[in-house]
Structure formats: C-alpha cells, structure tokens
Image (cartoon, rainbow, N blue to C red; front, top):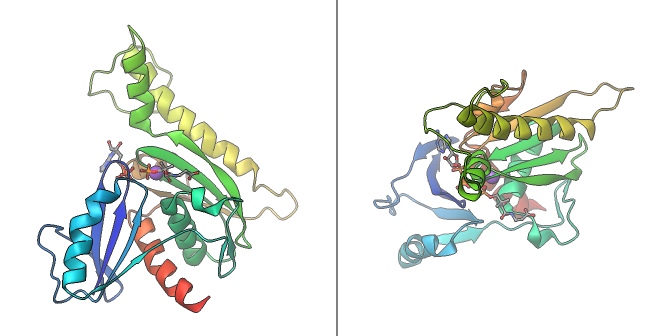
Length: 236
Ligand SMILES: Nc1ncnc2c1ncn2[C@@H]1O[C@H](COP(=O)(O)OP(=O)(O)O)[C@@H](O)[C@H]1O
Ligand SMILES: CC(C)(COP(=O)(O)O)[C@@H](O)C(=O)NCCC(=O)O
Ligand SMILES: [K+]
C-alpha cells in the first residue's frame, strides 16, 4: 500500500493506493504497518508534511518527493526553468499524457489558483496560464472595492449578471471559461481536426467540467500523476 500526498495552497490531500484503487487516508491515523512507500508533491506549506514524513522515517518507510524535470519519457516540459513549474501542474500533465496517449489535452486544475496547461498529442507541453481560482477572483474584488459584495449563496453560472453577487460570481466563471477557450486555439489544427481532450481536476473542477461538453473531471488526477511519476522516473 502506497501513501500519496498532494499539498496544495488550500489543503493537504492524502490517499492510500492499493490494488490500483484509492482509499481516503486519515492523516492522523495512518496504517504505517501496511504502507510500503510515501510519494508526495508540495506547492503549498511544506511544514504540513513534517509530521507525516517523520512518522514515515521512524517506520523505516521510504519517501519520494516528485519534482519537475525537462522530460519524463516522451513528455517535455515547456518551461526553460523547469523547477519553477508547479509540481501539481506537471503531475496533472503526466496523468493526462498517460491516460490519453496520442491525444492533445488541455489540463485544468481549479483550486486556489486555476491552472490551464496545453499538451500536444506528441507529449509536448506547449505552456499554460495561471489564473486566480474562482474564490480568489471574487474575494480580491470584494476586498478591494467598496461596493462589490457576495451574498454567500449565489452560484457560479455562465449567465449575464443582473445583480452584484451575480455579476461577481458569473464574471469569475466566464473569465475562466474564456481562458480555456483561448487554450483550445493553441491546439486547433484545421487540417487534421484532431480531438482535444479537456481534463479537469481540483476543488472547482467539477463545476467547470459541466461547462465543456465531452470534457472529463478526475478528482484523482494529481494522485494518479504521482503514481505515474514514480513508475516513469524509475524507468527513464
Ligand atoms: N467540493 C469542493 N471540495 C473542495 N474544494 C472545493 C469544492 N468546491 C469548491 N472548492 C474550492 O476549491 C478550492 C480548493 O481546491 P483544491 O483543488 O483542494 O485546492 P489546492 O490544490 O489549491 O489546495 C477552494 O477555493 C474551495 O473553496
Ligand atoms: C499555480 C499554483 C499556485 C497552483 O497551486 P494550487 O492552486 O493547486 O494550490 C502552483 O502550481 C504553483 O505554485 N506553481 C508555481 C508557478 C508556476 O507553475 O509557474
Ligand atoms: K490549481
């Protein structure tokens, strides 16, 4: 059994991976006798890992921290300074590339930030964008204006706003939708009409997925990326 950990800027997520399946992990009560290795990635507060990694060490369990590299198998990172790319983005790309081989993908991880990454069918990461996540978009406006307010119950929809919370919430959603539409332009090849798979992950992934027909939401995308990273980094 493997312990997989993804530390984001809002929360630490942990799952136990066994027989190709994820089980929720209670980080305050981990089954150390059954855990064979720990694989983790962190873009958030690394101190949140201190206690878990210390427990792993005292149980003689090997820990691997996923890092971005210029290439992994046939996947190639767009960044010149690869260490600057968020590892969560790289893991989501690894998962997209592995789950949808030979398919152009747009990988969207919608959490604290919304990241949009464009991947060619050959595995070339063409680059991407970092947007404030939906909550950051709305809170930056409510906190920096006198009159823009949220009411805590207005949902995000793609309609035109007809009151302030509506305008605020829907503005954040359509800004994000618009950015994903822009990403498609980087893959559209009129001659081949290749299929583009849009893949969503993260806290707001399901909400966004519902805006794009034929797209998928995978709550475990980054966790799957940790597994694939581990396999591929041993063999390449
Ligand atoms: N059902 C949900 N579960 C968790 N987070 C959600 C959900 N719906 C919306 N969110 C929002 O998603 C963000 C957290 O997403 P997550 O992918 O865990 O972030 P991070 O990776 O940055 O820690 C927060 O802004 C939270 O308000
Ligand atoms: C963009 C991010 C903050 C997203 O993090 P998250 O919303 O998952 O907490 C993270 O991937 C990050 O810190 N990236 C480093 C900058 C970059 O990717 O270029
Ligand atoms: K994110």
